[in-house]
Length: 195
Image (cartoon, rainbow, N blue to C red):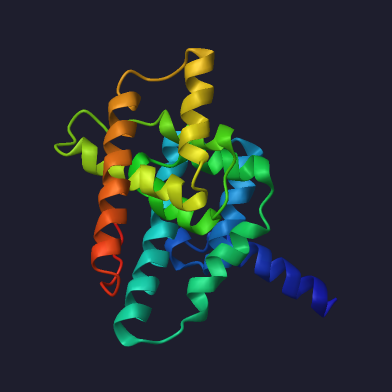
């Protein structure tokens, strides 16, 4: 009887607890549940993904600043590793382009089709520096697999579904990669930085 009350209490508590007050595990569980039900639109889910990833980013920055090895930094990638692939695809579809780099950092591996899904995202019209946004997204895809961008571009070209901006952004990113390679050969002891 007491076990049933405890289970009921946990269920009620988890339903009443605001998203921001939940643990990372509870947030991921909620996202998976909502995506499974299909009760919210992509635009309605995007802010929740942003909250989860912002918290993760804050913890990573805090760990680097303090020099501590925080277990919560490993928790989110571990939780995402247990999520079914179709749910990961839904998360990629729902996330705003600004959250894609962090989401890919947490997901770690994506397929060519998932890279294509990400490459079809565009910054909003009010974005003053869209190239910087694309650079971050391209770098995140590149970090998931060195050939993913090239394979995704080839597949999009073959199907005739490549967005008009993609070719120029892709060429620019290739130049950036070459520049980074040259700089790292000239200055081998320089600290590598993120984009």
